[in-house]
Image (cartoon, rainbow, N blue to C red; front, side):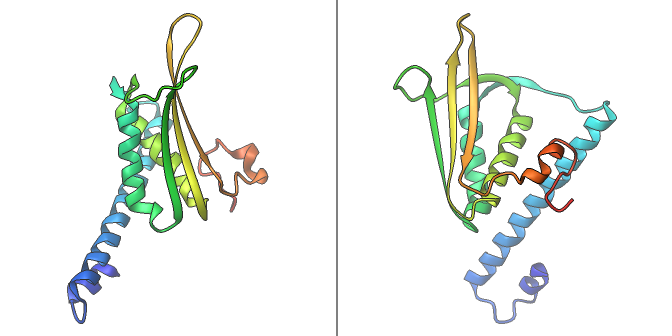
Length: 171
């Protein structure tokens, strides 16, 4: 495909080469993510080798990084704007960091998957990410991440199968 066209370099200027390379890199990253997701699913099903590596993570930073990655990969292909907002519930103040104990890679994977799906099913418009810190009555902190889009929504015909492996509208 594109790699062969790029390799031949016949009649292709530098700008076209850079565009083709960007497409190749983007597709390689998607393939890598898909492979990692399939391997994770296999590990979960075998119940033997999926380990969680907990560490203190700034969830704001993880989300900013994933938004940046997804923007470079998908948002340009779609006519979509991504907004990120962080708030402390019950106040008017915004927040720069929310620290959570989590597996950074799994957190990145979940945020990336949610963002990718939100963008994929939003033809044009906005995908909004809201990160909230709530303090419950006992004084415990909770991080709440919500992703909202103005896409078509989940088809009612797959709702009963939503959390089954590979549930799609095509099934």
